[in-house]
Structures are given as structure tokens and as C-alpha cells.
Length: 174
Ligand SMILES: *[C@@H]1O[C@H](CO)[C@@H](O)[C@H](O)[C@H]1NC(C)=O
Image 1 (cartoon, rainbow, N blue to C red):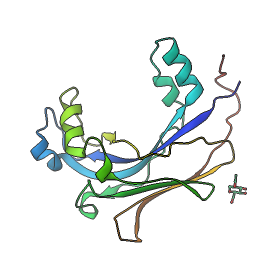
Image 2: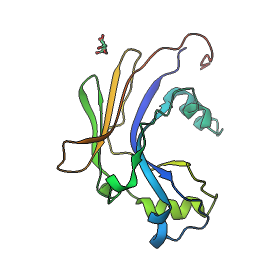
Image 3: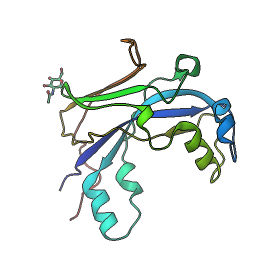
Image 4: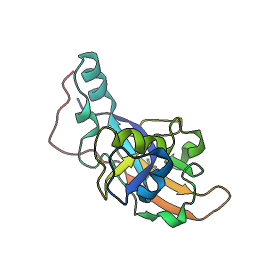
């Protein structure tokens, strides 16, 4: 059976500009080098099977090409990481459309938390969560996603890709 990719999650990605460990939320912004737009893809059936068996499911997110990331967006173009719009379309149908103000944990909170566990290095990319509307993609589907500031038609980062059925490799065993 084939791998079913039915989770596509558009996310604001933070690119570290300075090494940090135990980052203080109040100073977290100093560690941000910039941003990017990313899509977190998951092989749902691989993930479900591993979860059911109580096994780690990193492989479900680890297939080649599963986290496409846009070009780098310099920090100066995004004054407030808590007010950025993200959207994702599959075959021109809007599936996700949200603002980072609805994030459960804002960027400073995430940087403080993650750096309390692991040192964040310059160039590390941290994905931050996704708006509702996670959906399935099939081979041949065209996915576009964008990042922009509210009230602006200027797209700061964009991703355009087509889902493909890879030949060979992993076979999902139910
Ligand atoms: C995706 O885009 C290609 C190229 O424009 C087009 O040929 C194809 O039909 C599109 N796929 C779907 C599912 O709409």
C-alpha cells in the first residue's frame, strides 16, 4: 500500500540568528534572524500505525521532501511575529487561512521552551504550529502557500509545489 500524505500544515518558521540556550522570553526577539514559510507534511497512515503500537512516529514526517521551506524572509520585514497571515491552497481551493495571533504559544514562548531543552544554533529552523484546516493531498495535487502581513497584498514568502508519487522505496505494511 502507498503512503498516504494527508496532513499538510502551513507554518511560520523561525530562523535563528544567534545561538541561544535557556532564552528569556523577554529577550527572545534578539535571537531571531528571520522567518520563512514551511509546510509540515505527515504520512498519516504511517503515523497512525506507529501511534497505535506506541512507537515513535518521526519517520511519518521524515520522508524526503516532507518539509518544504520557502526563501528566507529577513526579520526587518516582519515587525511582529504575532500578527502574520498564513494560507494554504490545494488546487486553488483555500484550505488553511489564519493569523499567528491565534497561536497557542507565541514565538518568544516557543524559543524559551525549546532552548530550555536544547541549544538553538544559528540557522536552526523552528516550526511554530498551524491554523485549522489540515487536509489530504494526493499525487498530482498542486499546493500553494503564502505568508503576508494583514492588510497587505505583498506576499513575503510563497511555496508552490505539486505532490508526486515516488517510485520505489518504502512500502507501507498494514
Ligand atoms: C496541477 O497543475 C498542473 C500544471 O498546471 C496541471 O496540469 C494539473 O492538472 C493540476 N492538478 C490538479 C489536480 O488540478
